[in-house]
Image 1 (tube, helix red, strand yellow):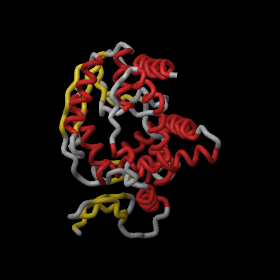
Image 2: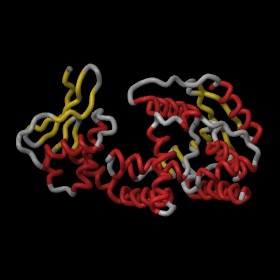
Image 3: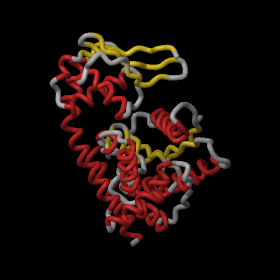
Length: 317
């Protein structure tokens, strides 16, 4: 069992490298947890030249010692390693702020190398369920991509249990983040409560099925995103959007155009309700007022229709 898990991990990394990498030099985002630790070990054994980047979020007592220990473990495996401290702050809650800080630090540390992340099939299943529950649309339900330069996820087809088994076989010291068991976080409850119940109800295989759903939706997105991008370029000029070319566009293209345009004018991650309201300014126009699409404590961001044009502006609160 242990050897099988190890071979699965090494094979996953080798396959990923063959599909996506032009060079054997990579960064690995290392937390010290089983997934990223197993990825680091497997990448080295797959023949990659690994530089481990450990992000210390400084959110827990003793985090500096945890980060230093993870970096030292990477060096013992044969990687180079560094620790980067970040400050977690900003809107969107603790998880979102930590993610922004982490990815920014990894982007600075990578020095033109791709960054490998330890997300597993279980993480993918949790992401799909969260997207479904929030009604976030196909882009969210499609989950995480194996490769979206410079970010790579070689373990999206590997179960979390395999990473722990491999680490045990390689005698690697796993650090279990207390946040991963904290029910205050929605993802933790999905992991601990929802997925096990779903597995019980359908007789097993829930995580694999959800991951397959993500893969199929990624194929759909690959077909729809390029024409949506072309349509957006045709319609958008500055902070305005020409309504006329969008009126006859299929809804799948039109809503992709609207999401892209809203992001470009400052509406971060527009939810379904917002996109639907803005879409109604195009498809069900009867003189309705502005649609709020975001903002901050000083001003709201609103979209208004005038004649054949949508415009966005900030309105002081």
